[in-house]
Picture 1 (cartoon, rainbow, N blue to C red):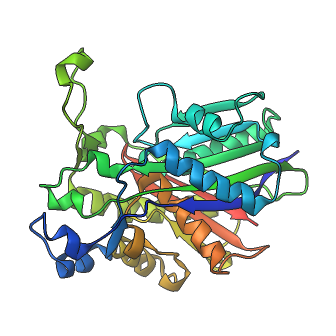
Picture 2 (tube, rainbow, N blue to C red):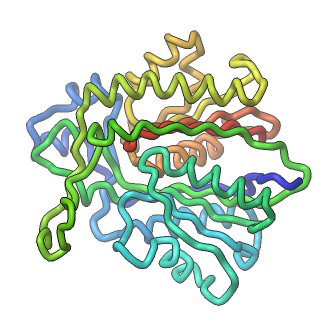
Length: 324
């Protein structure tokens, strides 16, 4: 049976870098308050780029990293909660902008919020094992700045824009991946956006922004529990031990969350890849951005066991264990 192998990775962010001091000019906050509570110091905010634009830039870097002809790609999945439009799907726009429209291809979006990239990764794994696709672009891309309420310092300081991409192909020699996912839908209002009420029409809310809303303390408590659970569950399914994990690449939400998890699991914090200090929380883009940056720094090598873990709105938590 064939399994996926990662051929190339890439990431892209807007040019506009915004520091905590920059935000303090428009929000009642300061650098010390943000850094102590989150570990975030800067983030990138789009001025005129859409989610599809960032996705294309990340995809092109992944294609270049893989050294392949993009015409072999037969699947594009974009994980996002901030699509360019309600329709068509952002993945179709990415296909068009990559000049890949005139070949057979499966394209669609997937919204799993901050766990979305891992849900897309798990989907592609299943598609490859069932021989429905051979080479896939998996992209997490967000322009979260478009749904932030800049009067709410509890959310506005946390999030940034960006995209990360994996180019994955089928291989009969690849090691099988192990996955875990769980959802607790009755906590959906813990992390959500303002949206359509029951039977509302688009005309009723025209001109209104669906701002992101978060119950911070509840999310913090959930995240600590969920990250530990996702790590332990996927390791259990893989028949490996925690000591055999070389690197953990988590969703980049909050440095304090990861510190608590490392302490609870007695696992070195140094083995957690963290870059939220530069990028902030980019939701579905955070894991592929962190992976691509770690690879560029030489932290990821062949034959490593790398564990990816995500958590967020839904509430959904997920993990994937990859042997490179």
